[in-house]
Image 1 (cartoon, rainbow, N blue to C red):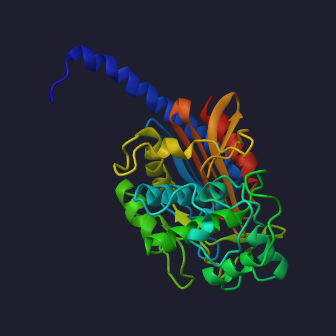
Image 2 (cartoon, rainbow, N blue to C red):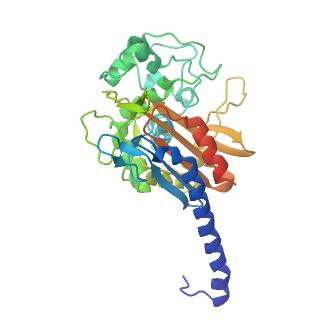
Image 3 (cartoon, helix red, strand yellow):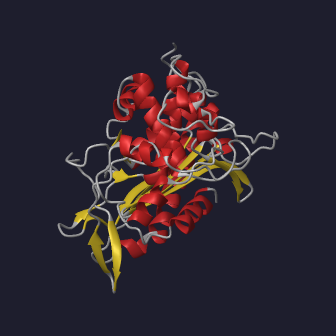
Length: 358
């Protein structure tokens, strides 16, 4: 590889770097204004970041990760990502499939035989695209008043085994957290390892995502963890206490720094050598039995906003909200991780997108 650059090339590149630096400062200042309300007083907030072509345009924390101890949010603060986790579960399943331990058109009873026989059979593909007809287990827990209790995965499987489907598999799109819970359970059973360990070895370590993991142990002490809060009115907040540790539909802990590393899978088809084009495969839309396409891909929603095609997902769980967007045409990633249920995350994500593409 040549180790020299001509003076002419240097002269050409300097204004490019200067332009990029000016763009980064400008975007950061605009985002600072958007998030200014979360820099005043003892309030929770968000970590936000924007990358383009593998480089950071903006990244900063706003508000407090721990109100009681006045710990500020930083780009390396660890958040619960809620349903933004789903793309990581989908990627883990595709890695499992590439290892020959499962297939998209497997009947899910091949891996979870406690479930009843469905007609037609529910496949892994149905789970991926939310076309299974399975009711949402989180809704069942909320109605039972046990969302924050400790449950084993086997208990959740048993609960689903006693529920009827709402439509035959493949006929309708209907978002249900049960689908991605079961994907995580299939990864666990087919790999012989926890989703946490399987994803660590096959996804996070190859990408250098050292602060990312699926959280499956309520007793674990997580360094730099943002406490989740719910609003109590009049500017007061209550820390959320939960023993919930189900993974697959949610459960991912991550940072803005690590999200910047994650989007390499969309930029580089060989980011994970054993699973070529992993990112591109995550972006492929699902379809119903009649062949009509749906907007849900593999843990990501394909949509248009501000005239751009993007892949995105929102996340929400008591105490946390999150937003992820990837713009293929710009090779741009936009990330928001917040530690408050009161954050208007859809509006925040849309504002971030608008400011980032100006």
